[in-house]
Length: 449
Image (tube, rainbow, N blue to C red):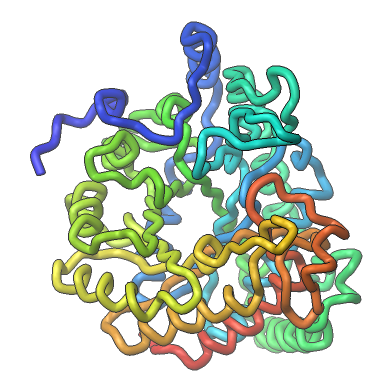
């Protein structure tokens, strides 16, 4: 494929999807100019460290846990909400590490996941057709007046909230909150309702015994006191992503300094589109969502465009097929990538292919369907010269009722108790922890590097 020379704004010459139409380009440019003048959110050395970790995951030396909200909400930029998200990801990573006997790389869908692609440009609310909600960075969930009109000032609000979120995450992870000497401090208020509480406490006890034993021999490990935690979001709103991108002399390349990792959605991965054009120029680790409609031949071309030097840890293929479809699609994709000798990581997103609606029109996901796709993904990779290097979840550390199933026994009739998501349903705390236990057992049976 003949490509035009990449520049920071070369994506503007390409067809683009999933973008809002702002009334005032001048107002948008003013907001973007303010963002360019502000300090970046992340440091380039952290990005390169994550890329190195992801290369290790691709070789089976560690495992990636990526998770967080479907779409962050401005109102959730607060101490309790951020702490709950971090707690559940830390707890899940402890369970996975214990079962897999290998390090876990933690990547949050956080500190920037404010935009969402949508299937239709409008929806009907209370009998009136209105523009669809595209995430707090673009418009309001409220459907009255001008609330659904795209507002450039929301971009700046999202940036400030991303800054505050990341600042608090750094304080927690580096200030002792993640200390493995005291993992019991991660318990949430409603942990008593978790079906796997006793099993989790046994794991915690085993970890503490192991730490005590090692330290009695004189071993001291700084990594026990803190964890590395990386941020990610879908790179959807390209004017914003361009404003966050800088050339870094030390590394001789362009980096998006708004997150450690970004991904391209299944709806915006057109080979000749603006999103692929932007992403092929940055040095961050990049994820690519791959659904049932993906043609392996086109995915090969996209990967080659995103990673022309075939660098390890650069591109992650995040498959999202849906229950019962993995065996049909994943083997062909793995074979094509293997034959092309491309370095990619494989991750499974068991959430996005498993959405359904109740008879009352409530969007939900079934725990068993999610688990089934995870299991099928492990099984396919176990028979191929590939390695399932990670899992990508939409989840929350809060006690919501959005997905049905799990041993907590959430049914369709329970969804209205605490259904809070503005977009897609998330696994709640109990379901997430239970999922971690089940995946941990799969990892324990998996291939060794």
